[in-house]
Each structure stands twice: as structure tokens, then as C-alpha cells.
Image (cartoon, rainbow, N blue to C red; front, side, top):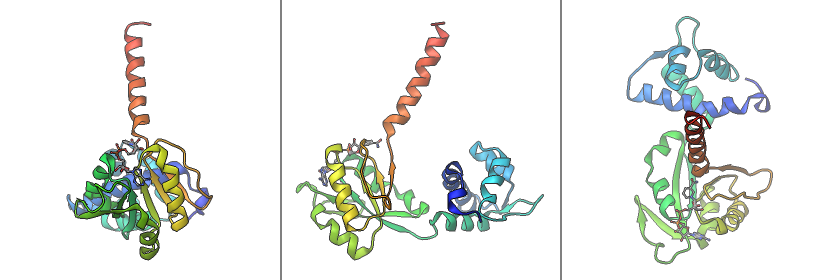
Length: 217
Ligand SMILES: NC(=O)c1ccc[n+]([C@@H]2O[C@H](COP(=O)([O-])OP(=O)(O)OC[C@H]3O[C@@H](n4cnc5c(N)ncnc54)[C@H](O)[C@@H]3O)[C@@H](O)[C@H]2O)c1
């Protein structure tokens, strides 16, 4: 296996796609063997790219035969760290927080929101999908007691940095941030920003160019 720094970011970003596809084939479609062509075909990724991506992590499959779906899923799952469930705290039990807590498929990707926190007294004590909303003041104790490393931020922008600071101080090492703002964290903390608005604007951008081209502008 290559050292972590030598593996392209794009390869790492494709691994969850391979994993989800292999999991579906293994769990629901009972497929035993898959070629790089078929795996890539399902994801719109060339077979040469699939083979190259996997080659960074070792030798998988047999030439001319393909990959054993279950074995490859297990290996990719281990590489991704999703062969276990990582507990996570979520701060901000609002509209987005509800949607995230209600999304059950996260567990198949090795991630489960085990604690939901908010600072609104009308929300504290209510339940979302069996999870009781707890007071954000308990966050530090919850993170420490449960040795949680993963935090999800779905609070308004103006509260996000403060919540991130509290998470980091309590021991969080990776933050999935949905607030549309840059978070300042120490180097050993990983932040992944998720901005749905950027996705939709790039779609609109393409639509608007197609329209202009059609009108010959
Ligand atoms: N990434 C995306 O594409 C996307 C999509 C929708 C919303 N958002 C962002 O997600 C965040 C939440 O959006 P929403 O629509 O769910 O808002 P919301 O107002 O419905 O929910 C925010 C929740 O955060 C709580 N909160 C506020 N300050 C807090 C604090 N200091 N500690 C703990 N809880 C606190 C509120 O009580 C509320 O329950 C916003 O930053 C929004 O911009 C992002």
C-alpha cells in the first residue's frame, strides 16, 4: 500500500462510491463477482481508473475474473474506516438537523449520530428518530464520556465557530460542517464543509450558459 500522502484526493473521494455500490451489490443484489468494467460502469468511472484507484491499496481481484464483491467491500470498508460505526454528536436540531438525524443510511457508511444537541429550551427534551435532543451545555461531557471524535454542525452561521471551538476543546477531531462559513480549527482537526447552495448554483450556471448559447448571445 502507498503511503497516505501519495494517494490522490480524487481516489480517496471515489472510495465511498465504490463502497456504497459494492455494499448494494453484496447486500441486495447478491452479486458475487464484479469486473472493474462493470463496477466502473455503474458509477460512470472508467475501468482503468477503478483498477488504478484500488491498486494504491494493494492487489485485489484476479485478472480476467474480477473482484469478489464481498471481499472487496470488506477491504474498501476497512480502508475507509467504515468497518465500524463512528458515533457523532450533532449540534443544531433544526430543519437540517432533523433531516440528518432521520437519514438512516448513514450507518451503512460507518457513521451514526448518537447525540443531538441544541440550545433552544423548547427543543431540549423532544425526540428526533428516537434520539432525545439534549442541552448543548452537556456537549463537552457527552463527547468526553463517549470518546466521540466526530461532530456535525447544523447551527446558524453566527453560532458555528463557537460550537466548533467547544467541540474541539472537548476532543472532536473531525467536523462535518453544514453552516456556510469557514471554521478556524487546529491543524489536527479535519473539517469537511458541505454547501448544498454551491451545488445548485453550479447547476444554474450551466443552465444559464446553455440558454445563452441557444439564443446565440
Ligand atoms: N449545507 C447546506 O447545504 C445547508 C442546507 C440547509 C441549511 N444549512 C445551514 O445549516 C444550518 C442550519 O439550518 P436550518 O435550516 O436547519 O436552521 P434552523 O434554524 O432550522 O436550525 C438551527 C438550529 O440550531 C439551534 N442553535 C442555534 N444556536 C445554537 C447554539 N449556539 N448551540 C446549539 N444549537 C443552536 C437552533 O435552536 C435551531 O434548532 C445553517 O447554518 C444553514 O445555513 C446548510
